[in-house]
Amino acid sequence: MYKVILYYNFHTIEDPEAFCRAHKKACQALNLFGRVYIAAEGINGTLAGTAEQVDAYKQYLWDIPGFAPTEFKEDQTDYVPFVKLIVKTREEIVSLKTRETYDVNKEGGRHLSPEQWKAVLDSDEDIILIDVRNDYETRIGHFEGAIRPERENFYDFPEWLDEAGLDKNKKVLMYCTGGIRCEKFSVLMKKKGFKDVNQLQGGIINYAKTVGDAHYKGKCFVFDDRLTVPIEENQEQPLTNCEITGEPCDTYLNCANPDCNRLFICSVEGAKKYDGCCCEDCMKSPRKRPLDPDNIYMPTRKWYQYFDEKR
Ligand SMILES: [Zn+2]
Image (cartoon, rainbow, N blue to C red; front, side, top):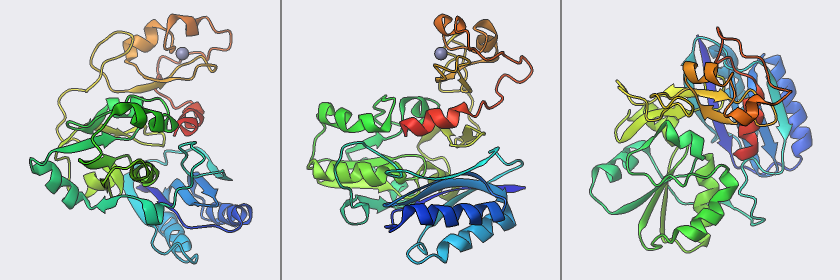
């Protein structure tokens, strides 16, 4: 058995480059796989390894001054769903590309525990429930009744918010996979004048671990080779259909045209029909990857890059 962890912490890092070098060495020494991003505003990562390796990493991070409060979302897997380790610096660990400053620790929304979140959804309180994940993530699973803005990139959300015309006096509840995107989007909503902004502590992953699947339909997109994890117990039908054949399906495929590389919902039949591509145009690409009919859903590693650009 292996553990997969997902975490972030907005704590100022004075010298991100030096922090990154030391962090990479520590991860390599522990033989961990996954991705860690480091910026002046903090750290965001997803890593996998044996329970001992992962637990040693958690302790390593908690021991760094300022990082003791880091919360980890944990899952068990029977394989390590990464093939390499990437530890690198970025401008921001999650970006809305607005050039505003986000003091997430002071200006963010109220964090609701999974129990508090469920209590609000159980009640008949009139709320605005927002899924702040990207379009392709929300399709395979989401909280019932959530507004899903259908945007391809997280940084498209400020524009969506300006156009959505939501009632600023209503109670807002927002959620994402592990909580990090809400940290910034809640600040933005408050800056825009929303009075009662709330966010799900630890995201869908933490909610599922804590209170289960109440009010949630379907699966959850994750940032490793599993691509999805089940959330709704005894789910009978996928929420989505194959984009090529139209049959019920909630399996992702990266378009085999590397210049497109779009993640789309695709059945085995659909993959065979378009040779692993998302559309007929992509099939014409001279750089198209060959489709292995026995391993249609083999991760291409390209999806990391695809997703990270959009998050
Ligand atoms: Zn394509």
